[in-house]
Length: 441
Length: 79
Image (cartoon, rainbow over all chains, first blue to last red; front, side):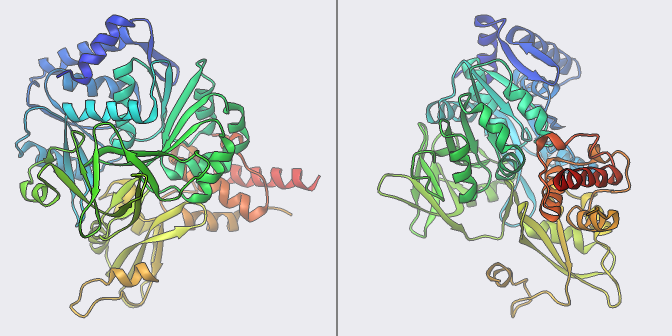
């Protein structure tokens, strides 16, 4: 089986002068990129790394990261990219967890994601999965050799990371940028002299684009080949606004997760713009609904398992099937529709967050007597994390101090954006936090 | 109409508790959601049009520069 790095080597041989990646003022051709990857691989070998090594690293959205990612694969090791702001204690904890675990042969990546009940879990992804994801995307969304693909999201997340795969398989071009903070940079990328551009964005970034860049977007009506939304459901109003702004482009909503890989996709710029629709399974994937209404996925894009946690793996993955916490339906056209989920996980901009993890961190803050982390709504940002806290009598909440306290312990996307001091947290008769009560409010 | 620095500070601190609005390197502390939150909140609050071109390091360098940007936009609106 060919790996991603085999394709990269082929690209360097077939299209040595084609631009492989652009980041800021730097660009590398395929020949230059592969040379750098080989050099980095040699450097890693000289440091004693090799087959079976796992490299835990903070992911940055730049060429250095890309080179390191390919290089660790090239020497037969596993990449473990973490969020770039991961606090040191968390980084050390994950490093220890990975070092103490048996990593099956053929594991390309371990991506840390939130499980349904608390601590983050390392999802193992094989080289075979990477190629299957790539082929799903090529067939399902029409990636092509002459495409410029803009990556503006974090590369430790499957949403953005997976877009590297089809680009390398086809010898297309990547443009790496750091988030959507500076829309001018985004539009500069869009101005890059190519015929076709495409990108992947989480709903929050699409909101940014629509709110702050809608007029400018009109200039690229003929250039945007496709735009994929993923990570979290895109509000219907934003779907309609995008259809209006980019009438000629394919606009995709995708069903994907770290555990399942890239599964279904739906071009909602089809005149119907169906909310909640995720489309049909892609080339390598099968989807069905279990008897109790859950979405179940099959195919080579599935994870190998959770690193060092066979028990958790068995809970989610059995008989070659990953059963998700999402509830769904399949319509008469074979398209998947999501109808909700029945666990406590909160989805913020594509990151799944277990509220208990945030609460655990907040509980160590002096004077916090009780707390609950819920999904709040913000007129600008959409879904946000909100923490309701009960404090010792007479203490007034110092929001900023609490936010910083949590930020020192958890990844930045797990830090609530809204805080409210309350007198009590609703609990069930047996003392558990009554999450349902807060969801139904 | 003039923008009030203290009101803006309160509004923004409320939405972005992790951001230090006393910083003179504010732009480098903000992520994309932070930038958008600031622009969209001020746009809604003051009825001014803020777009991508306004999200410059100069405009978002400090709380003072944010206030100046709002004042400038308000003046343009009044014309």
